[in-house]
Length: 177
Image 1 (cartoon, rainbow, N blue to C red):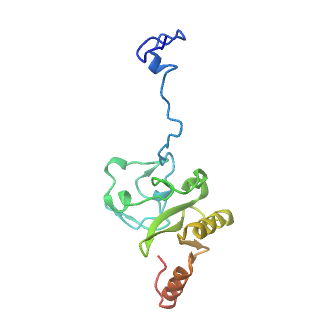
Image 2: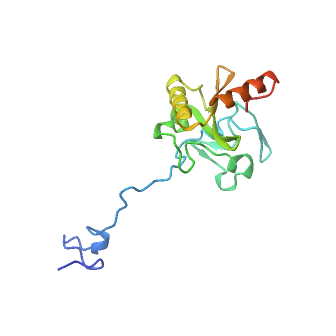
Image 3: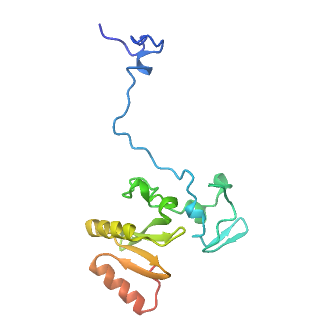
């Protein structure tokens, strides 16, 4: 005889079957990533003013607490809520180990000619050889270009039209990003 979902579980636990051995568990559940203890975005990337406190590169946010934002619920739209972390965004192509506080680099999505591109922004250190190799392979597979900074010098990697456009920008004295 079949056990009903609201019947007592035959294992004798005293719980309903649906809450015990009959529980439905998604097999391929996608867990949304969360910042957790990562505060890389608050560690000196932002320029602007937050509640009267001037922010500039290299200076952690005045409201950055011990692995948390002390004003998270009331943080301003710009720049805080507008910031998008490439590792954190839904459908991120970046592996778990790319969490910014683990690699010391933030991967920030942006647009180039209507396509997704990325900026690798220091969150404590320049991108290492392993990260750059992964990004180059990713760029070649997807056609998504990326920018990065190494020892204060800026670089771009991507398809030929991207390289050509960036070379023209540099020749005109324009910023790459």
